[in-house]
Amino acid sequence: MDMGSGPFIQHEFKDIYEEPINDLLERKWLGCEHEDGVFYFCKPNIKPPFVFTNGCFDLLHAGHIALLLKGKEIANRLGGSLIVALNSDESAAIKKPGRPINNLVERLIAVASLEAVDYVFFFRAETPERLIRAIRPSIWLHGYDEKLEQPPPVVDELKEYGGKIVQVPTCSTISTTHIIGRVASYLERNN
Image 1: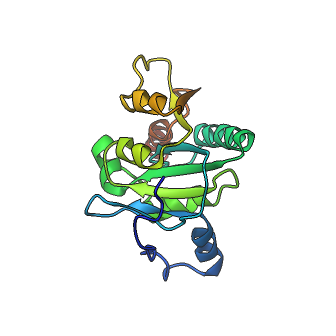
Image 2 (image 1 turned 90 degrees about the vertical axis):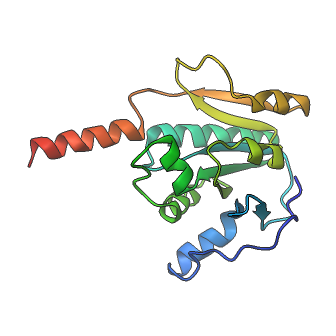
């Protein structure tokens, strides 16, 4: 991965939060996809192997935690790092209208605060395929439910350079969508 391809990005949230959060983000902030579509990385010295996963990570729940713990377990076994890439607010809204509930900065802080996560990144595209091509992870950790029949097209590219996809089963009743539904039902009943 050419991690020296762009300048250090001064976090847009650097002045918003107090020292503990700033320190956390300084340690775990890997970079972003800039508005011009170029990826900027601010930690040129991290070395592969990388375990990579991505998603909105809007309302953190047990399914997210299970995925990230599995990712960290694999990264530790390989002697590498777990990189978590989050959808920007705009790309999350394309996938699920009306979302995200939490904005990008809040989601980055929540995910970065987890011990299992080594680095966070955000991307603006609807899918992470360009970012996967740039990072070239050894493992792309992908949550799925039983209905997933066809892996994403980038899997073929992963295989070309020796990377692979690891699919982690998810429980269809543990999701942000289900949590939102339960909260809405609760509010309906109690208002």
